[in-house]
Every structure is written in structure tokens, then in C-alpha cells.
Length: 181
Image (cartoon, rainbow, N blue to C red; front, side, top):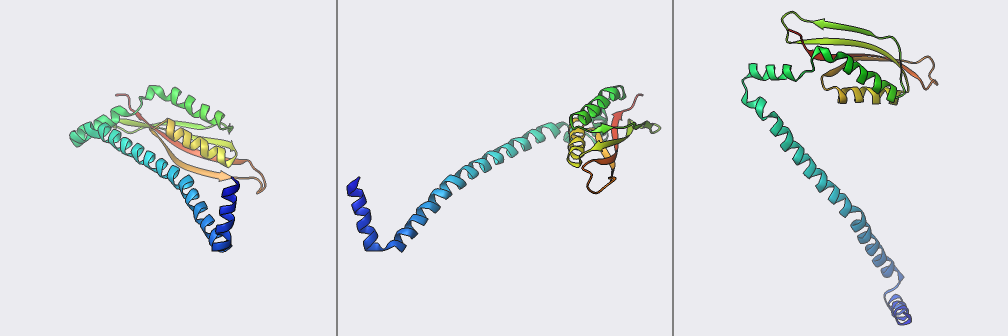
């Protein structure tokens, strides 16, 4: 070990401290590159593989629809909608999501809209909620993810005072359902 220190001291005097400092910076940059870039590149490759698998899965899922005629494809779509009888279950999911997101729900308006001779119906929900803005966004995202046939039609915000952390929001959702025939 003492021999190594003597050799380093010799090269330091011979080359000068600036060259050694530069070499040390190059070594540090190389170590930084290996420590930061290599794991990032691995994650990128992993995500690319995941995206490729998802594309294959989506392609396999849509194969039946592509081969069908347009009329048959729309009938398949209508059959994929939840039936009107599931409205209580869907509403329970919505209210559970509001509870989980710490939102206070007020009396809402609920209306089942049916078009004459349509294969689907629309259950319109106007739901006033009160809570933090981030919680409201989380609630909306959760409803749209858990209920694929739901659509957010309108959203309005109001706040009593600028400093108030609570926001009142009026949300209008539509649930698209398979109509009774």
C-alpha cells in the first residue's frame, strides 16, 4: 500500500495536479454514466417490451371485430355494454370511489334516457361533490377506469374563498348501457 502511495505521488509530481484532476473527472463521469445510464437503458428496454406485448394483446382482442361486417361489429359493441339491470352495482362503484377519495357527495340527479329503437340507453348522473381538487381528479379518473362505459360529460368547479382548500364540483357523468328490448 505504501508503494502505491509513492507511485501516485511520483505521477502527481510528474504529470501535474491539473492532469490528475482531469483524469479523476473522467473516471467519475464514466462511473456516473455506468451508474445512471445503464439502469435507465434497462428500464427503457423493459418498457418497450411491455408496450410490444400490449400491442399484441390489443391486436388479438380486436381481431374478431375487424373480421366482422360493420353491422355485426356495432352489435358486438352494444353487447359489450353493461345491461340496465347493473345500474345499482355501477352506482355503488361510483359512491365507493367518492368515499375512498374523501369526497362528500350531496344529493344528485339521476335520469335514465332511452332513445326510441336504440340498442343502448344512457343513465345520466349529476353529482355534486366537495373536497380537495386532487381528490376530485382522482375520483373522476377512478370512475372512468373502473366503468369503461362511463363518460364525463361536464365538470364545474366553485370555491367560496380563494384560500379555502375545499372545492365544490358539479360532475355530470353518462353511463352507456345495453337497453332492454
